[in-house]
Image (cartoon, rainbow over all chains, first blue to last red; front, top):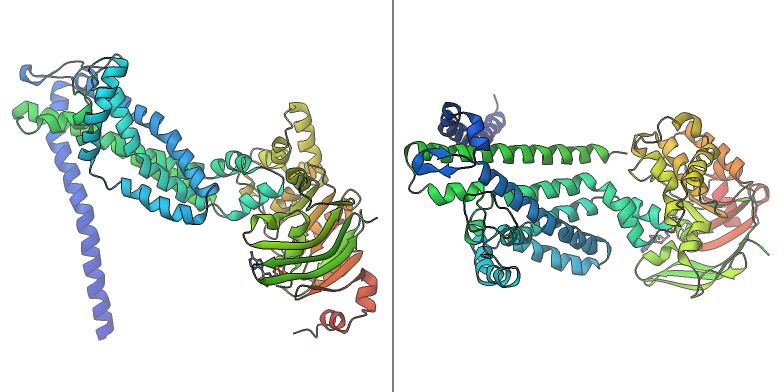
Length: 289
Length: 250
Ligand SMILES: Nc1ncnc2c1ncn2[C@@H]1O[C@H](COP(=O)(O)OP(=O)(O)O)[C@@H](O)[C@H]1O
Ligand SMILES: [Mg+2]
C-alpha cells in the first residue's frame, strides 16, 4: 500500500464517520421520541389520543384533537395568507424586475428567515393582537393572529425556493412563448408557473413544515387554550406549543403524553418532507431534454 | 414589392456592430437560406424580423425593416400581432414542458381563441401539417419533453402553424438533430413552403443548396452576396463567397 492510498483511506474513514454520526444522531432522537411516546399511546389506545377532545393532564385525560386541529388550522391559515403573496413576490422578482433589483432584494428576503421567532411573536403581541381585538372583537390572541404571523414567517422559504425554481427554467421556454406573441404575464401564467410547478410545490411544503414546527411566536400570540377553536378569532393551541408550555413541569404519564404529542408532530413533519422530496425529484426528472 | 424588405439595417449590441447596413428583399412563399460562418450575425438578422432583439438590453437598430410594405419598427406596430405573423423555430427544440395539446394550442389561447370546437380542429390540423397526428393522436396529454428530438422540433413547428403565420423564421432548426431527422424536417419545409415564407439560417451548405431557392451569404455582419441559390453555388460573384462555399474559408 502506498502512502497516498493510506492517506485516501484515512480521509475516507473520517468522512464516513462524520456522515454516519450525523445520521446516527437523527436515529437516536427518533428512537428516543418513539420509545418515550408510543407506550402510553398503545396503553391508552391510539384513538383516544388522536380523537380525544379533552386535555386535562391532571385528571389523566390526554385528548390531542384540539391541538392537532389547532396546528392544522394555523398552518392552513398561514398558507392561505403567505403563499399568494410569496408567489407574487417570486414572479415579480424573477420576471418583472431588473437583475440588479433582484440581487439586492433576494438576500434581504432571505435575511427575514434569520430574525428570531420571538421577535415576530413580540411584534404580534404589541401590534397585531390589539389590532384584531379592536377591529374584530374577541381576545385578539387567536387563530387569525397566529396565521398572519406564520404567514409572514414562511415568506422567505417560499419566495426564495420559488425564485430558484423559476430561475432554473431554461430561457428557451420564455423565448418560445414571447416569440409567439404572448405577453409577459401570459408567459408567466401559462408556461413558467406550470413548468416550475414541482419546485413551487416543494417550496410550499417546506413553508408548511416551518409553520407546523414554529413554536415560540405561536405561543406568544395564539392564546393557547386547549379547545377546538370555533371561529378564527378564538384562541388555539398547537402541538408544538403544547409540548413547550408543559414540558418543564410534567412528570409520569403527563410527560409521556407530551412525548406522544411529539410523535404525532414527528409523523406530520416526516410526511411533509417526503412529499417535498418526491415533488422536487420529479422536477429533476422533468428537466431532461 | 417583396414580402420582407430591409434597407440599410444596422444593429449594435452596445458598441459592437453586429449587422452592417443590410439591404435585401425576400420574396413570399419561397425558402430563403442565410449561410455564413458562426458569429456573423445570421441569428441577429433573423431576430430583427420578429423584433426578438427588443428583449435584449442595449440593442440599437438603425435602418428600415418592412414586412408586407409596412415598417415593423414604427411606434404603432402591434408587437404581439407581429410575432403571431412571424413565427420562429429555434436551434434547440424548445417545446414547453406541458402536454402536446397545450403546446399546440398555446398560441391560439394567447391570441384570444376560446372556442372549443375551433381549438380541437386546429389541434388536429396543425399536427397533421407536420405529420405528427397519427403518431400522437392517442398521446395528446403526454408531456412534450417525452418526445424524441425530431418530434419536438415538429411540435414546435406545429404550434406555430396553428397560428397560420405568414413567415417562418428557422434558426438552424436541424443542428440538434441526426441526419435522418434532418432529412425529414427538410421534406416538411418543402411542403410548408406553399403556405409560409420560410427564412432558414444554416451553417450547413448542403442544406442551403438542397432546400432553398435563394441564398444570402453573411460574413462579419455584412451581407456579401444574395441571389438565386443555384447561381450562388455555381457562379458566386464575390471571391469571399466562393472561398466559403468551396471550403477555403478560415
Ligand atoms: N445578446 C448579445 N449581446 C452582445 N453580443 C451579441 C449578442 N448576441 C450575439 N452577439 C454577437 O453578435 C455577433 C453575431 O451573433 P449571431 O447573430 O448569433 O451570429 P450567428 O447566428 O451568425 O452565429 C457575434 O459576434 C455575437 O458575439
Ligand atoms: Mg446563430
